[in-house]
Length: 209
Image 1 (cartoon, helix red, strand yellow):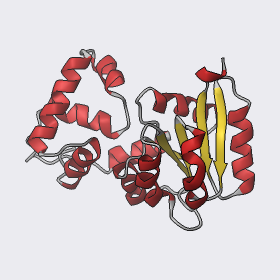
Image 2: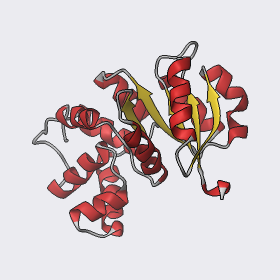
Image 3: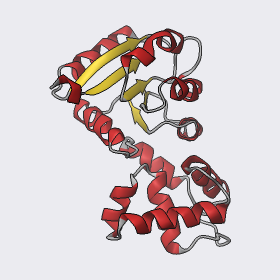
């Protein structure tokens, strides 16, 4: 049955915290720690062999920071979902992490159960965030009247910005998945962007959401 476990790798320089996560995740049913590293440089040599589904990544690392490590890790293990797990809550850092390709952003006071649920959520295409981080993301958006987006498109982009998967958005707005996809296509086209991160950044910079 081990093949069905979610493979998790940790990149965290604090040994006590790292061992705590190893214990928590390694002893939870359906999860398996396949690698544990104290820095990006250390991880870079071996992480591809660990075949991670999800990487829990600290921001404050010796050498390359967690934020700058995200695109590098994505090159090494393109299919892995990266969740930032940190004490930092600055808005700029959160947006940089998401723009660099992080799937989620949790703070280290996140309860163990939520960490496990977040790993699963990232695997299902969601973008898990600590609730106060999600709130911060939303509060940083004050809407502009000049927006080219329709109210529905704005609503969907706001949902995306809080890290919800397309499937979840469809369920919560009582519309089908294809409709959500077609709205997202229109949003990208109107904003002239090609990715979720760019759409969020541009809409945020121009206060469309």
